[in-house]
Amino acid sequence: MNIAAVILAAGLSSRMGAFKPLIRLGERSMLGHCRMLFHECGLDEILAVVGHRADETAAEAESLGMMRVQNNEYHTGMFSSIQCAAAALPTNIEAFFILPVDIPLVRAATIKTILAAFPGEDEAVFYPLFAGRRGHPPLIPATLIPAILNHDGVGGLEALLGQYKGIDVAVWDEGILMDADTPKDLERLQQRQVRLSIPNRQEINTLAGQLLSEQGLAHGHMVGRTAAALAQALNDQGYGLDMDLLYGAALLHDVAKGQSRHEIKGAELLAALGLAEIAAIVAAHTDLEPRLTSSLTEKELVCLADKFISGSRRIQIEERYAEKLEIFAGNAAICREIRGRRERALALKDFVEQKLGRSVETIL
Image 1: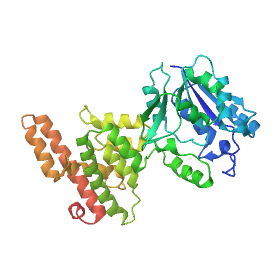
Image 2: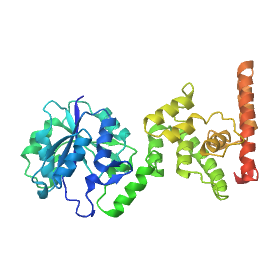
Image 3: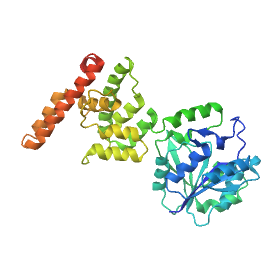
């Protein structure tokens, strides 16, 4: 498919007190984050609409390798920028995204999910949907470009697109709803940018609901509660364990359950979603030998917590492996491996208890 992206960067930024396209979030400007989003998803036709402080924005767009078009009527409102972009888009595209520059932290996984849902020939508009709310960027079929160019602008793009079929695409990305109109909004985005690879609780619960079966969710929640209890006890002693990272990894650790080497397959799936830290924990959750000289991390706690949960019930480590030994009693090689895993799990339990200064059972 030939899909383009339009980034609207022509506005006055009047409520922000600073010029939004050039505001830095980490190492990139807001315009840079928007460009990187679409570039990571394989889109080559990325167009920035400039207007207010056009020379500065155009220079930033040029440094990013973006196409740009100038809207001299930007003071009349955002729809004039949309019409300007629609007139400048290549004629061979099938559809295009529209993203205001002040919504810069949409996840690449969201764009890929929308693209996967788009059939290629459709007059419907595809909207990302999080927590029951539509957000940005919508994917608009190129067949609607004439309607955009001929629209009188009353009610803006929302009113125009409301005349056509809309298809909601469920995503787990709160970033589709997070803009930066005010300095307070910007502060929230700055905090999110630093931790973008670690979803918040609402995001991770939404993702788990999309990926896990009912049984998988029940197991994940039990492992999550167990790991969180241990982590909180350690944090009360001064440890700095990341509770959101721990919760996300615990909830999703069995995301590829049923597949061969499910811990590796699960880690690959999560890494592809941009969740590298969670993926690293998931990759190690089945079997982990504690390094007694190392510090205790979220990885060890998720691995240990998983050993205390069978399905959605709590068991002892010895009981867990006794069940497995009974199942594979006729296979000496597998039983040898099971015993090795049991010893490593018990050693991990001892390691955690040394750090806690008490038994795991007193906490659970």
